[in-house]
Length: 222
Length: 222
DNA sequence: ACCTGAACACCGTTCAAGT
DNA sequence: ACCTGAACACCGTTCAAGT
Image 1: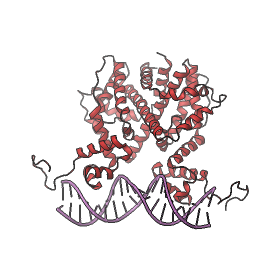
Image 2: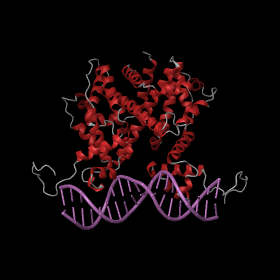
Image 3: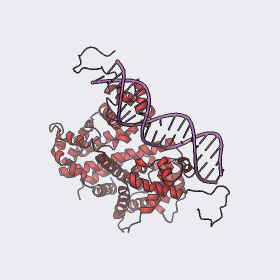
Image 4: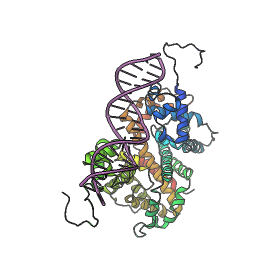
């Protein structure tokens, strides 16, 4: 029983499902079962409809995924306290985006779709570009600097997410260990030297260290 | 007619297709039609066999993709002249890997599968880690430094490849333009300032600039 | 205007059987 | 040992029709 309050402006059959309901159900499926399990058919079943009804509200599956990303961004991206020091402002803005993405591994599929994943993220882009300009970069170089930070951040998310998925899936997990165990110290001396520490070293979260190094490097203009 | 020369050690039906033939055909399909078009069924048809025959030579599709990546790496990764200056060594090693990956966009699907995509790439990892150590970093910090460079490189490839795919697919291409055109200069002044230069600025290849900045930052130990 | 049923054109993979 | 046929359990999307 749909609410009979506001009279519909256009005639025709009243809608039984809405865009919002679709996104809500899709979000539930993705968080409960993973993005691989989100299919138009399953979504239709769980919402109590047919696959084709969905196509009346979203253009195709890709649009659905982008809507889901926007939904996540507006839902979880909260603007943090911004430090006055422009260099720290850059770091805080990048770290906030990074954390939001890291908490949401399914997003990787959609993430790389655009370089500013959602209009809700624009404010963070502004902070980074503005911070770089305040530190003395030209506007053009500041945009390039933002891109470098975005590459680094997106890469960290993608590599980490896929490594985690692989660990869950297992099988090839020991392959890398084998490679490192069989390393020839004459040909690859440094890798042989750190071979037994490789796994714990790469398991450490060094996003912030790398980010600070990158920002430092961008600001010491050559 | 398979070559009758070397007598087979094990008895049974002689193989009609080989791992090498599978990889070769798969490579052709991928370069001609894109990685999306590589299906076990199509591969079987093009090789003149049935889908199930493939599963006798590769475990599953994922293994096939990893084999394809290894094949590409050993086929195209040539070791460049390595400069004596360790900092330049890092830059050259990273740039070589980056170029190889950039020339091969389909690889993105497999790329993130592991943090050292192939044993053929280990020599480049060695160069980077060794260069960082020679510049004064501890072995542990050198590994972290390599990881940062890898995140940056992988991110650049992934973002660029997806942007290109999207451009080919079109449709949402103008969405970003619209967002930048409608930017509120009061809320996002820096972005509004560079809005009309955004597209050409982000189209520029600034991988090397960002890489140098990152390496510089990693080497000025804080 | 909104929804449904049936169908199209596919997937990766398993199983049991053939040679 | 290697390959085949048939089947299982799915996909996203289109088309024509119903209400």
